[in-house]
Image: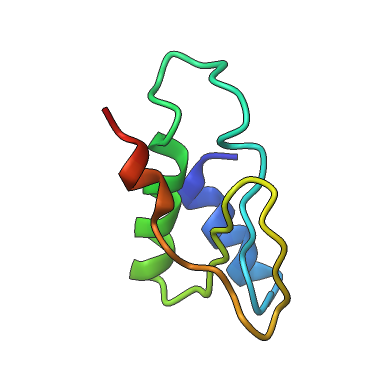
Length: 76
């Protein structure tokens, strides 16, 4: 799914938290590696959807969602 479709699916499923995965581990596409998370966080914000954005390997629980834009510090 595209990022905006993922946000809509989250809304349709009545999920409490959107946790996007498989978007930053490998650079396998022609778009910048961080484009999917940029697009999905913008779409989630517009739709008031709670989103978890942990760093790769970060452990968290649903009572304390990681929501920093850590990928912005990695842009060249």
